[in-house]
Length: 319
Image (cartoon, rainbow, N blue to C red; front, side, top):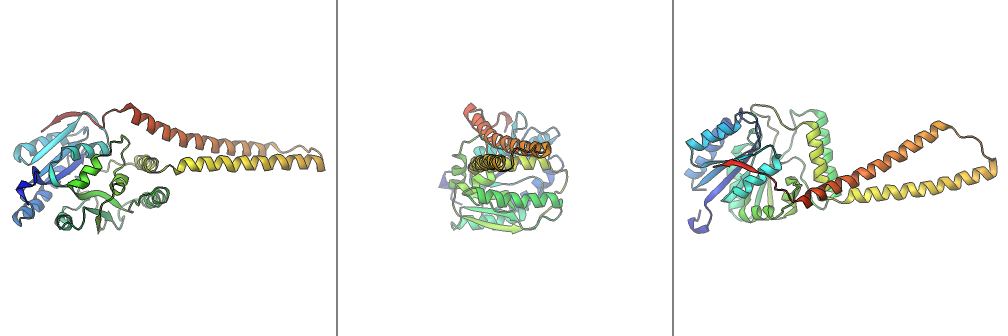
């Protein structure tokens, strides 16, 4: 690496963490081995770890502090509370000083063994980013896997970007790519959409699903569902068009119904209709109205968040 490039280090690793006391020592040990071998082979000369504690309630921060005391290449950022993975990842990217930057999780579901291949692909200059994707979901509940695949299909159809099925946040980026990601200041961040939106050339590395080495996932089905809704709203306005189309369809249906009732009265008189069918129609139309209002409300809520201009995160301590 060129020491005159102006970068403090060659490679920065950004690792957002939330209650990862069981996995953090294992992650550091495994990843440090890979980075040491890269340094010995002269692919890199300097590197840094940037751990971001996203308001953990266990001893995650204490472990980070101990690692930083033992290794001057380890830095940490402790957020004042849990702001979410997106905010933690952003904090690490803004702190990173490397010519190349890696984002990855601490649970070792992102295999560190892929780092040399990813780095080689980007260092050669052919690609700006090396992304990873899971080709299998072995070990996941079938229902969760089904909805995950449907989400990727839906967001690709609704938006102007292609979100790769099984794409992970584990990726290696050059500095222009990172700077482009950081230039997007939106509060409602959805990295899986931001990464393809900024463009550049990406090489994909595939691997089979790997289970966590320890601890439990922090992503419940409900959290994943809400995260997917955020992604769709952040990168597509088509749900708004859907609400308008539904409104137009039911307006035309109501016109047809009025004509039908008028003709029926003229020809057959005015027989008493059943109340059950009337109630069902009212409930159905009310449901469509509430759905449309809900879609509008989601976009309005996101706009409200953006207008307030609150910071993405607040740092309590860093080193």
